[in-house]
Length: 409
Image (cartoon, rainbow, N blue to C red; front, side, top):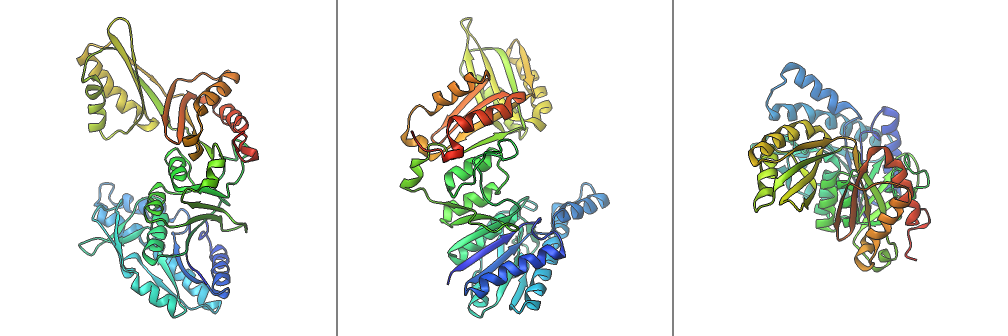
């Protein structure tokens, strides 16, 4: 018998028929003798609908009131699932985040979990009752309901699993696991049986939408075994866990890509100390996140300073950079929004040299030009033209043998 926390997303809870399906899955685990705690999201699209209503009344309203409204979506689904379980002969009890109690800070719409009172949930489990908990929400210090931000139900599930010291946290979604890359881009993409927290964190930060990045951070910090499964297709899914020696057999675990990148170059900047701070300081002050950075020093005593930002921030970042360029006496600013970032991720990089050069050789063989390069201990990222994205992903997937398991030669 195991203590399992199961989280079901908005797609899984999207209709009464799907809630009945989730009910049967939960009941099957209970019938096998497991103790189960369920965390659910609102029905797909419901949170957007509620916030649209709120902003229709007052577009500049307080975030506290927005949270009061947005949190009601989960209150509906916990009640519906508890009723479905009751009908199926399974004892169940629904809880909102504040009722558990999930304590958060007071950052409404993006709150962080501070603590969880696990006693109530454990008591239910011991009494043969399935607690059904609202994801995405908790209680702020002043007693108000606070939401955790988009994808926050994943974080709720992992946090509850950590508080309960659960044997496993299962994240049910509309995909059957984590793949070597997006199957829509590379049909030969393979579902991974295992991936490390560190690799999954890189994949999530690089654009993989399977899990919310905060939930992966939480799981890694508290060593919660995390499994991604499909609500609709039976299978083992992908286990996200601590690194082990067997994982080093795989050179690369996956290829991630981000389509929302944009590039800015401040050309002909005087090459002197403090230039990077002078350029990026105002960008940071404007709350614009910078990703990759490259500085090229020329023979004439100037440097070209290139960096990437989110595509939505390009216009704002370009205006700031143009102003800074004039103050510094730079030659000008160039912008490009037709770029993407493609990254190789794998803990095997730690013990194997030559990954980057193999990547560059493969891209060169496909006649794909690299604009920027960034490396870390388990990741190599390149910026290329957007038109070559699918070709680059397929080329690298084949070059590193990912359809066969990505084993080291």
